[in-house]
Image (cartoon, rainbow, N blue to C red; front, side, top):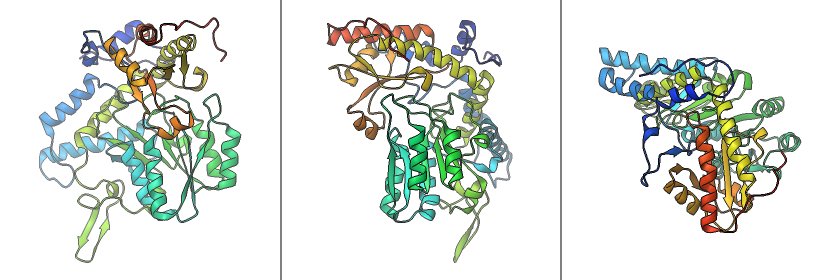
Length: 434
């Protein structure tokens, strides 16, 4: 396996570096069912895995796998060491104060549900408010609706501006007026690509004594995260969007919060002792990791985190920005195509769009015939799509292994699709203003 060079500056990846990176992803060399070379632009849904992640998990299963903790034999001790070392890697990846603040779950969705079922049930009552945004993924909406059903609290949504961003003054005003018990919001919209000012919003909430939860699912793979600097109470993300395996996610919580919360699941691993009269929970982080944990998955996630840090999250962001800007600005020049998202100065490497009188599923299917893998539908954001008066959109999302050629190929393919369904489609005469 090639060694990935350490890249320190925040300039986009050059051709040689990108070629070396792509060599680490065997799946990128395949063709699609139509025979066209694959351009994988569905990274906001799930990314591909590099050889180092595959090897780390394979090595675990082939060399030292056993159940972790309490095992006296060699394999269990080696698995336990690798599993807990993975927690330290993730704590360092997000600059957590302690690995005790890192809880492994089955994904970002499970992490949010854990908070809702523990901290939420413990702290919210009838009449209390949860504040979130209209751009949230269902994973950051449904658990709060369920909490409302259990407690009588309610969810309030922050609106979008016409430019697909949020008005800071409105956010500050709503925090002051509503005094929500919880402010739960995404760091980056999985449809719009809109980047929210996490540190600023958390600071405002902190001044008012409001608990915060940040969904970093679309941020952790693409930009450096420092939970100490951001000062979030809870932050969640999943492994499969950052070159790691499926079936594992992270809940970061401040230690004082996690200490005060009741356990979510009961069973083996989360206890100090059990009797016929009751039980005593284990210390953090075991308290929230009942049952056999995702052992190989945690090891794979740690390998992915090391891989991303070696490349440099700042360089990954710069590279994605360069490709997304080509796609975003190119789409805006084509009459009959609407880009659903802000200008590139306010968003990540996600480009969602619609074509007049063409269903998103038809667009995605036609692009697939041309070798481009994109996502179509409501992207688990039905409230957002209703707000935008759209049933569905098509989304291209770029990542570290995508090439500039693929962004240009994407634009050409979209124009082919548009001409097939709307022969009158033509370019606009001038570029849009930022």
